[in-house]
Length: 328
Image (tube, rainbow, N blue to C red; front, side):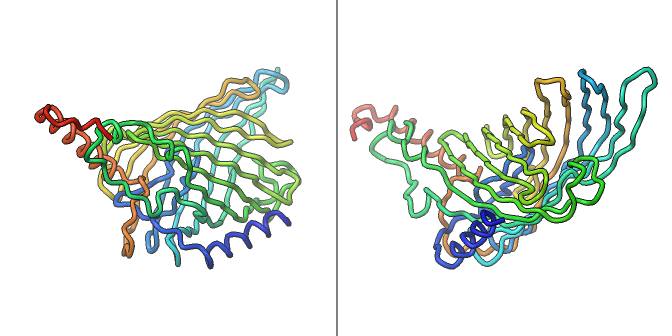
């Protein structure tokens, strides 16, 4: 409780004192289809919806043996308010399934409830792209194409929120009920070539009998402004449940405000084994007015423009061999 109150106070102070900008992007910046959150907010006056129905199967081989078969939906809504770096959100997962205990006589239980439901806020504490000049170096081809050590410095955000769990929820510990708290740290690195690396470290259900620790590591790659693929690993640790999940999938940008996606989730253990498949979409209502157009490197369109500039420089280099562009 004390840790969360300090985190909320820290976010409030950041909102008052910080001048971090550059959250908004020209195209939708969805967290889907992975489970991690981006370090950047959606931007002021942007309302973004994310939804993903899924199918799930589980099987436990050790005693007590059981199978789970069902479906559910992940959902989230994000709204940028007051400051570019600030976002409020509501997120959750609702699942309906049948759990069958395997014995001489199988016993089935129908279950339906929220696996998680929370409301919270996210604030960008540090943006390494703020006030940086991302224009290409006209005198050095290799300087533009080469690795930049500065890209190892991540954007950093903090999150804080409140969970709500209903009584007799089959997806939580028996004594968990009502309100609990959550807080965490998010980092994001945007590398050249459309690569993005995101980390999430989250303490969940703080103050309840089931305090969970989650870590998520996500790597995405955009081939062009339309297509993106990703892979991630998620670790979950608590006295009630522990697992290591893996996800792979991709997304397609239909237009600047609408994205479709799909992903496969699995683990490598049998207590229980997990296999899930989801399909989803993200849509935003964009009423943003950007006062300071600062490039934070998250726009797929901007990434493609940079690639085009580098290709044009390469062509000019071949045509004008008498000029040495490799000298710094």
